[in-house]
Image (cartoon, rainbow, N blue to C red; front, side, top):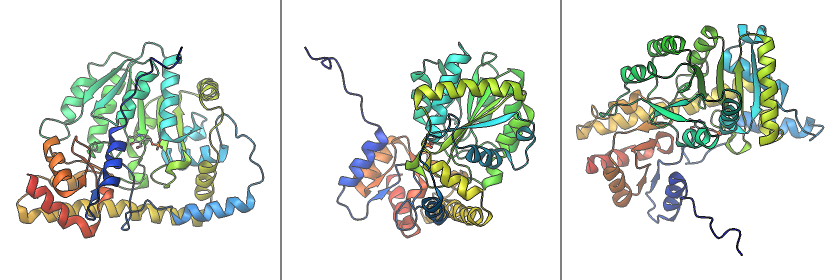
Length: 397
Ligand code: PLP
């Protein structure tokens, strides 16, 4: 008897499939706008110098590889709270906020899902439509009922009115997942005014916000990108935030992130954190140490931190300039207005508004690879290739 006889095959991640097709494409002028990682002018995903320097320091000073505790590296937790909630923030000072180190932002989301499933039974989780596909599978996988609120309209524009209208109908007490900045996959972010309106609905419906913060520093800047998180943390007694150090520290494979909890008081925070440590123990025992040690080394040292901030600013500005450059390059084809949103969106991703047929044509005729929904990773572009891309887009439009 075969124990595995009835095991079927799960289709591969479409983005990874796209990467495979790209690798096999012999066209030297191919362009990968698919996978969501930052790339520099050489097409490489660099290790920031600040990370290299911190790693060198760790090689010299690290004295043990014994387990870190259930909440991870305490210095990392403290410094990350400063980064996310603001240095000297009131919540930290009054013991109302804590960070639990996780394997990346994905681990933080998984831990949040397990916490909701086991401690807030019956609560649904509301996701933007569209959202990062892994949100869907993480919460469904934890046995949670998942529902959606609209985010973009049929003309590929952010639709805040529809979002607010839908949130007003969400059952009291449910969880609403919001992207802090650099919305994946659309690149459309809420304005400060929009965030205030969402906060009003969250209060009125007594919802629990879960803010996914995977791109701090890639939108308008480190502090600016945290504006909405800080607004919610100040205004609400309870909040969950998942923070990722994958993109902003270039630590992707080191699996570095945290689940941040804000509770009504220090006593309740301790209760919630005891649950998180218990759940994490069953998921991954203790988190991987290296990435968090690197982040703590950088954030805890003024010189290294200044270097990292400068490098992160460089990445952020490069993507913003690529966005503007592409819109300008579309001008001679009379397409600048139609694609003006690419310049207005934030972060690496752009919902271009290209149809699946146009995306397929870009791939077969020009070896330009992007997700069939029309999502392009702008960071995969280079200034030397902007005109080629604009020409290719003009040909398929
Ligand atoms: N959330 C969003 C919206 C993302 O796009 C990503 C990564 O692509 C993550 C979370 C998770 O990041 P990681 O687990 O690599 O830290």
